[in-house]
Image (cartoon, rainbow, N blue to C red; front, side, top):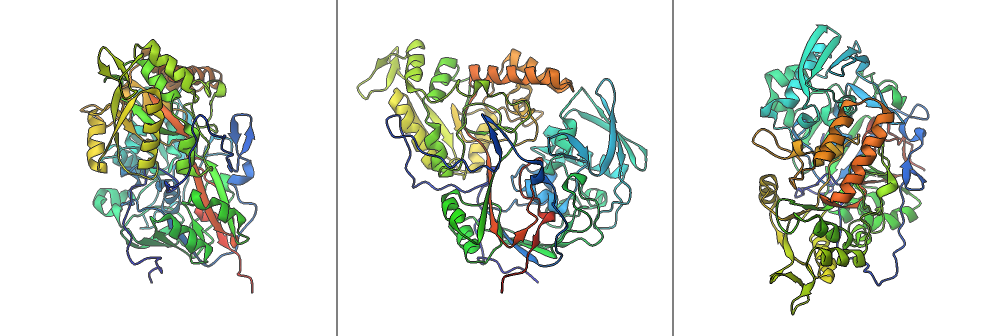
Length: 577
């Protein structure tokens, strides 16, 4: 039986690790307008500039009722179920449906057991010994054991997997050794304190070792995991059906879920159109949308039949711009700083989030461990300071069109961009208008995704639009800004702007080697300060997870690493008669 899809066929769209689809026909502010009142609807506990979430958001309050079919919509298809091979944002929740991880973060963000019931780390930080849970199986009958872990880690870093994410997260991993059936030893090249945290993320879930060895290409459309559901059917760009895995009984202890999933099945439809996701939920044709449209947030809140939840992902906020620091004029930090301070993030957040997103001018999400709000206003919107920085940089003359010049050359750059939910053309035009007020000419070059990606990795741009890299650890700063993360012949890196700073490299590398919070807090604080001073990118707003669902849906809790809905805990209350 196949699901009743909301449309017979849907055109897939790029979901650039974003939790919502933007729209463009909304007002924005400028320096002279009345400040916008933002909803800031995050479920979190706001303590000054810090955000946290109650422990009860992450574990079941009690057992749910078994049975029923959950109808779910999301904005885009991942294109593959091989979670090791992609960096798609949907993996954050999808990975918990089909797969399990070695470890799980607890309510405070500490690493806790899952398929690994315990572990030891050697004094030099190079050897991790995992003691694995017994009795776990994959849906093809293969046992989960030390050999399965070894095969999975090799698959993640195998060049044939072409992993843009999982391989980067375990880059320090050198080799694994099976000590006995349920004891696995991992050896690292160098101390890497985020190792356990990244193993808790959905992209590093365990796939059947038999499938990896015998039919790796089949993972894309016929995945075999050890998770609470199995894939029943899949139609590319239309939807998928998952059915409950009989005998499953190894959920993360933090969730307090026992035994099998409550739902009989999940019918997932891919719906790029934001309005259709909203209207289908409103009409009762779907029960949950994992990509709630922010433009419909007010209507969802006002509905007596629906609930809206807004969460912030840990790690890095969205970036509106990334500078190529090897190319003029962005080889001058004063120009980078001026551009950052000349962009009205409040307006950008409105264009994408309709008042639902928190503008951001610093470099870690406000709910990330070791976030330091001391630098949150260093790059705040300040056109006066931006103009002063450009004057200091020597761009003080103006031409007939009002653009700044120096030695007869006009100040400007070309923005490389591609249309996406997180960076629409309206965002590019808004930035262009803001910078024009400073006398900076921003030209916009919109390209197809494939062409823009090739140029991004080649460093063939002056400035590039959009960007997000989610992770459950502040080590996301290393992924984006350490010089080792610059793309080379040996690896695909995420430091697209080719930014290099010896002091930042030292801070982030030292943090990777330390397990001591007393050392990590000042290291990451100084790294955030350094980034605010050197401005490799322009942060724009927090990465929000917006979900909406019928009030019939019960058992809604959230994943501790990704702040997305944890689907195995969901259950349906009887419909009112």
